[in-house]
Figure 1 (tube, rainbow, N blue to C red):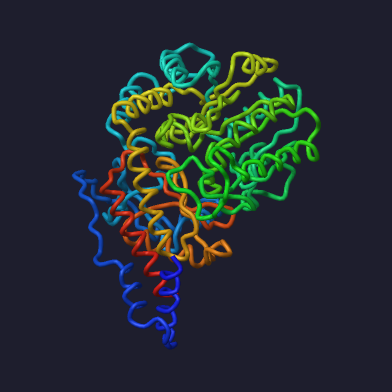
Figure 2 (figure 1 turned 60 degrees about the horizontal axis):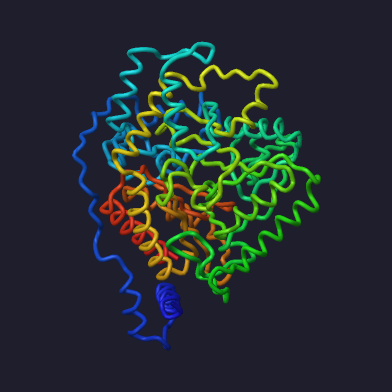
Length: 507
């Protein structure tokens, strides 16, 4: 590794006109070894999109600036935005007919593929029968889907309430936890994202999603057990095909980092909340936080501590659910725990607005102390869509695809980490992957926003769409539709390698 880094430094010196007396031709040869040899060819796609005949890009941007809330412009990706026209499975086309490999899936939301034929057919069929009615009536799609979804969850998680989004689901989970326990305080991880509604904003622990108003009262954060960026970490902490490059001397089955992070949670419980609490929220893998993973036994021990304090344990599966982690259908199963409540959204409907709170009969009964009505939650079309998504997951084998293609991507990305000084960490499970970028591996300081944007834009220009996350926007997020192929993975790896090489050349 040190030889490679030295070579990169020498090459940079040569580009700046400085001399390189000590390394000579051997160094130059080592650098060339990592330079791309040819432009990668995009995998074939037999689908033919419709010709775009709508308004111009200039008109869309003008309307976006003039009539859309300015927040829409603030979250618009790329200096040169992508104008999406049509999608099919893992592919997107812009208004000019350019094709992109979608490795972000509308923020980890398109689970089985854009316009998946089976999901599309189920949607069309339901639209011909009944678009909308509510829970004040009894209608088949709701009950058929409730029973089907419940069959995917372990006992006693069998009682479901449908919402329209993950933020709304987490709002209701907070309410149910407080009603059931009679306690108020809720603990979550620093760096977490659980939604942007006034209540969920309190669970979310990232300054850019916070407004200077009172929000989420009673929410307390504890240190995120991040074994790469945090103060403690080692070489076999994570349930992942790829570990950090941090060294440790822990014996098999013993993790000092885990012990230290659990001590931090104990300190939070002892100093920052009352003796009895309502709940603990945790994503099995942090999504917006940058695909952050915890030590293997952390959640098991954390759940025990929380329950001793009277709280319930809530797994936010908005991004990790429905087979995305590959090894299991739900992210919490990879931690060998059973939560008291599960919230879900995004992939549940393959992009159709739907969310859910699943809990035990006992906790659900607490919700009836008042009346809550959701006009669109469990809408007939939403339930038909979601039911067909479960069918597609089984019939297409998407969980197995997540495991096999995801593991391949992780192991190959780790090779790029070992080649480039600016790739600090590669982590994740299945098709929930994070690549954390750094200024250098020693300091682990985040790569600058300017550097991130250069690489990000380059990847897009070469035909691949990925995401960003992390407290400092320093992590590339790869969470594609779960129908991608190994050929797609190889195409992305070549593009990513090219973009890293381009950046190092410019630097």
